[in-house]
Image 1 (tube, rainbow, N blue to C red):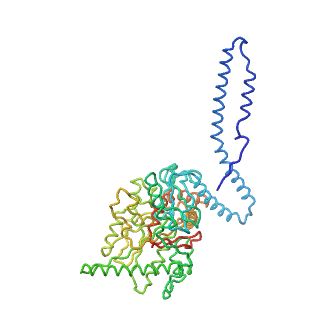
Image 2: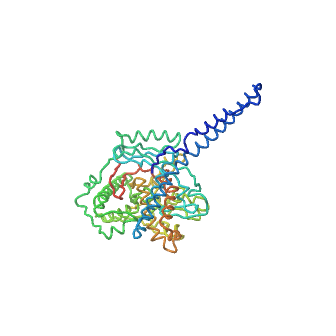
Image 3: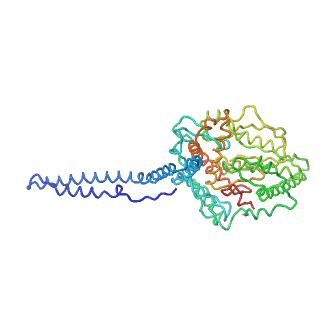
Length: 523
């Protein structure tokens, strides 16, 4: 929401004070006509006092003026909303209240983005259709926080927990946010860079060169162009009922979308897997011995609420229908989160979902053993109902042909950790990586809608970690969700997730309706 500051008589330059000083000086009467020295000293003293008074008053007014001017649009908006609510027809009050609350929450997030923050991210996979967002959101620690409680979020970031504290998220209610920005023009590319201090500026320059209009590592396709790449013999066998089982909260994908976007992607993955099989044959011939065929690992990453789960479910179904009948397993990195007790002990509860909150060593060990053909590997089970890793519960992964790995931070590599670049990272085990992308305004909207749906479903379960939110009214629920996004999910997106986007083999960009509108394929 943009605000325009207008002049106000109370905030104008204090001319009446100048007139008062002039009158006071004109009325000054010397003690004696002969006491010229005393008169001079008195005049000097009066002038000095008046000058200090003017400076103090001017400074006070200069300080208060912006705050008062900034507050006036909000006061006007509150009055307008009150009048509109009063005039609303009784039969439509509930619907209008929900719509108004959602609009206010989105506006709150947008207003927060106007706060200047320290870092900028300018990332674009190509020279044409995709910008970052052209906006920013900084952590909210004031009006959008409910009850002065600290907010923590984790797993897939769809819900929050509270702890007695005056800060919102991250243990710092006034935490400095970072800025997600783009060029605001879908016909021009933004520079691909993460600016962080002097080192970040240097890296930004290199990234800008690599993502200039003349140099890009990606082919770019519209949804219509991409749909033509489906092979004629590839027929969609997915039914509407099966599709609904694949969809996560709020995803609105039709069978036509599956046919146009995900079926060609399935064919592309088939060719990649077949090519990898040929390379394995070459290695066997070179070594002169049989080697265990390693599973082909597909990673799916992206922001909270972007639709990673739906993408993973659809690909699992489509790949399982290949004529080669591959064995396909799907896991999420949530099972490798540290238990809540460990997060609490390490004081990183507010960073749940950040790289620091994962048992990376356990995840890396799993991937290493998987690639080596180790049978019957155990993966911890994460419960979104209890918001925690379940003790003693596992799923078994037994030498699949293809493994789909879903997680927000699976594309990180040595560039994200300059001090340990010689180490092995999750991305080193990935054969094909997919990044599900969307503008942050859309992500926020989807996140708020999902939070409200969870409030009416999962949260209503008495065993739910977030059961306390079940009876919360719409406005308070949206305030909580907005705070979570601004203080936690936004920071994770800017600091960890978005910088890895251009490392993906394929980027699926979604429009505001959850429909893939552009596809970027690495050359």
